[in-house]
Length: 620
Image 1: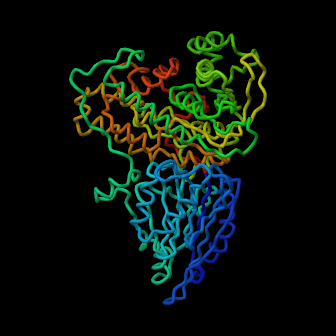
Image 2: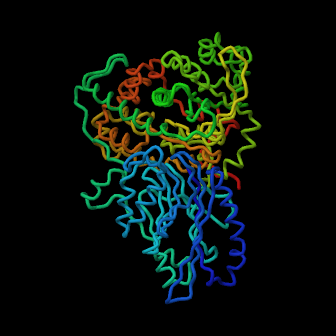
Image 3: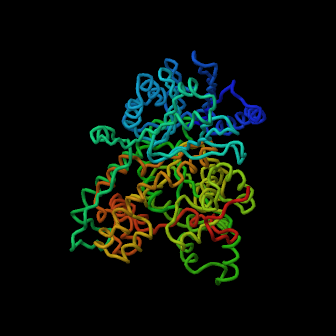
C-alpha cells in the first residue's frame, strides 16, 4: 500500500489572472503530500524532473511523490521507482501473473518490466498480465508520455484534477485533502489506461488546459483484437455464462448433501478461494513481535467473513494470532426503540439471540453494543474455536460511542471525496430499489469501515473475563466484499426471478438474469472500492478482497447462473447457494446458513438520526 501524488505545471506561461492560484500551489501540494503520507508511514520520498523543447521556450515541471507501507520483500523500499530515467509511482500488490519471490518487492519488479517498454501497447501488455489491486503513475522518458490508471476492478484509489485556464495544473493522487474548490477531483475510470503526451504538451501548447484536452488518450483494456485480449488474462473482468437452466432443474433441499452436478464446482470454489486467501496472507513482513497479528478480518460472523477467516487460518503460522475486528455503534435511535417498544427493553428476536450466548458472556458486557453483528460474531467465534484448536483468536470489540462517531464525520467525509452524498457515507453499493435506498443513512458503511480498520477496541481472554484495551497491529485486513455480486446474494435477484421465472428472467432483454449478474460484475469498479481504500488506508492499513481476485471472478463467471444460486429456494439456502454448500462442506455448519446482512445495519451504524434518503448531498 502506498500513497501517490503527482503534480505537473508550466513555469513560464502563467497569465496574470493565474498568479494567485499558482502562488497557492506549493501549500496545496504540501497538504496533498501530507494526506497521502498517512497511507505509507514507513517511507516517503519525492522525485522532480522537467521537460523542455528546442522548438519552444516552455518548461513543464513534473513532481512525483510516494509514501510506502511495507508489505512485500525483505528490505524497505523507497519510492518513486526510477529505472533508466523512467519513473513509477506504484500503489498496489501483484498476486498473480508476474513471479515475485517472497524476498522481492513487486514494485521494483514492475518498474524493471516497464523500463523495457517502447509503445503504449507494451504498457497495456504489462498491466494486462498482472493480477492484483493497483493504481499507478508512470513516466516513460523515451516517449515523454505519462501513463496512469487503476486495476480493472478499481480496488485502489486514484484521483485526477483536470487542469483548467483558472487552475492551470494537473494533479493525480491517491487521496485528496478536503473540499478546497481549488482542486476538484474525479475518480479515474477503470476501463482504460490513460496516456498523456507531454512532449506534444511542450512543443505545441502554451496552455496546460488545452494540452490536456488535446493530448490525453485512452488505451482501452478490451482490445478489439480478440487474440491480443485472449493473451492478456487480467485485462478485464470475464463475461458471465448465459447458459439456461434445464426445465427440470434439481431443487436442493438442504446444505447437508451436495448434488452430483455441483460437487466439482463446490470443490473448485474452495480451491480458488483458498488460493486467493493464501496469496493475500502469505509473506507479510513483520512489523513487530512474532506474537502480534499480521492479518485481521473485518468479521461479522456472516458466511463471507467466516469462510475467509477459516481459510486464512490454514495459511498463517499457528503461533500467530488472528484479529477478528467486530464493530458496533451506540445508536440512540435503536436504544430508544428498545426502551419504548419492547418488553424488557429488547426486541424478542434479539432476546433469543442473546440468550444463546449469555451464559458465556461477562456481566460487564455492554448491551448497547450487542448489535446483530456482535451477536453473530460471538456465536461464530465458538464454531471457529471448535474447528481450529490451538489458534489464538483476538475477537476485537470495536465499540463506538455515539459522540465519537459524530465527531469523525468531517474526517471521513474528507477521505470519501470526491463522493459527496449521504449514500456514500451510508453504503458501498448503489441499490436498485427505492425501498433499499430509503434505508441508507448518514452514519453507515464508511464510518463502519473507518472505525473497524482503525482496530482500536477491547479483547477478552475468555468469554467471562473483563475486557482489556487492545489496538490491532495487523496491517493487512481481509474483506468479504464481492461475494454478493459474483454469487447472487442480493434480494433484488430473487425479486426479478419472482416477477418472470427462470426462462423469462434470462431471456427478456430488459431483465435478463444473466445480464443482471453481469451487471453486478460490471458494476464492481463503480462500487466505490476506491473510496473504501481511501477510508481504510488513512490508518496505514491495506484492505484485501479475496473474492475479487480476477481468477476467482473468472471461475465464478464461467459457471452457469443456476450453479451459483437458486431463487426458488428460501433465503439462507438459495442465495449464494454454491458458497453455502462449500462453506458447509468444509465444516462451517453454523456460518453456512446465516442470512445476508449489510455491514451498516449489522453494526447499527445506519440510521442514527433518522435520515432516510441516500442521495442527499452533504454540507460542505
